[in-house]
Image (cartoon, rainbow, N blue to C red; front, side):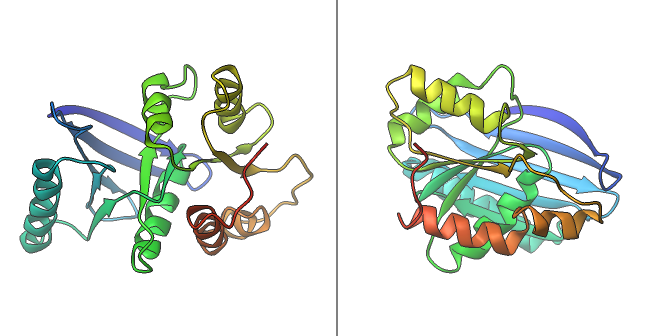
Length: 212
């Protein structure tokens, strides 16, 4: 396992989160992801990420770890995400929202892969190359203005590499946003979970327009 520790402070909500992110290295596929998280508002939780085309060993290992975690009683929440309809590249505070939406859509039979895009500059080129090889929609998700943001960087990469990715940037439109509490503002700009659920569903089922 490749493992790293991260500490994230969300200054909009004054939340301090600690993460242990791990990835099972596999010679036969892209491996198995494991994220353990806890904050001063949310009890310890675990998310296991099985990528598309995972080998039988990694897929079985992910299911085994999820079952063990649920039985252990150590976690308030255990998510097992097995994505193949689309890949969500989420930044910062949007990672938890993407995971929640992906879990809800899984109950509808729509499986999304969620990637924590922990580096915006430089871009994780290896991740983008893997997404290109998967030949499925990619969604960039950020609580940031789209112009000049993470999604724009991915679109620029795409333009320089033959427009091979199907990219759907989701973020903040360049317009005036009134003051308010964080939850209501997310709804105002379309980054609340109900709106993201609708947009992810449309993209994953090929009902959303491709960004040109």
